[in-house]
Length: 411
Image 1 (cartoon, rainbow, N blue to C red):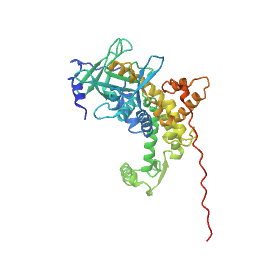
Image 2: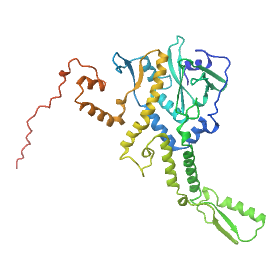
Image 3: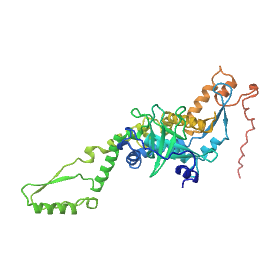
Image 4: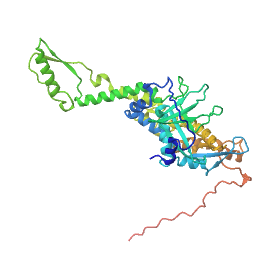
């Protein structure tokens, strides 16, 4: 159930509202690329899309967020562990925690190319909650420049208008979108890019199911070598449909009387090479999402030495670049809402899959002889030391006398 604060917000009891609203829709959003269609064809009916979305969204949802406070020196910052922004991120609203909130936000972004987040304020104009809006319920009101005039959120007959400051672009609604070369206002989903491969993968799965229902036998034609009475032909068709068609009748022997000949009209699964075709379609879908094929079960032509390398590549090539976009957009939006210079970012050290990257970076900095100890500490995020000479390597443990093994005595 939505919180009472959000209900009041939708109904117009909190914040600003307008009585007259007009629905806008750009030419770039057509029926074939609607959120409902992409979600139904891709996420709900295709296991590869489901797996790719789950891999990326849950990985980003597991990342820990930190708040950086700028200090006097260039690019230097102090990490804050307590702040109202971190409290809001850890518990966005009464029904969601950080992980479920971020997983849903990233899933919306991957399925529709757009993700919408709104802030709810209390009577004192203090930000209290964050809520996600379904992409198909939000319409962008185009502006004369690159900044939209506003956003309209509709549920049934209820509507809400979010204004956008035409000078700064700030709004109580955050719109994160993926690049779309043919639309100025809406993003393009990876599902839309891979739609042809998704349809092919779904068609192969349906065809395989049909073959299983029919005992693995393709359909054919019953050829009668001479003319046949129309009434007898209709009776024969009805008998064949009743006795031999469908999964329950698969495997039955066809027994006919008369001058008949059976001729197959389709190709067998081996002729169609369904297995390789389905695997190729799966790889193309994973390619659109940037997921290594080994992580979706395509083990025959894995390009990585092992599963660990594939996970590392997924983070380096797909998740971190996407995380940079989300963190940048999210941080700028929260800075405008809270009117602060504090920067919201993510903690790379909390990601187990990047341990190889951290070890390489630490070794490179530690081996740099041209850097002082404090410069090395600054690169690794540690504080400044007034007396670096006080740092000494750990002493080796004291040597102990070997324990003599007990001597065995003969009876």
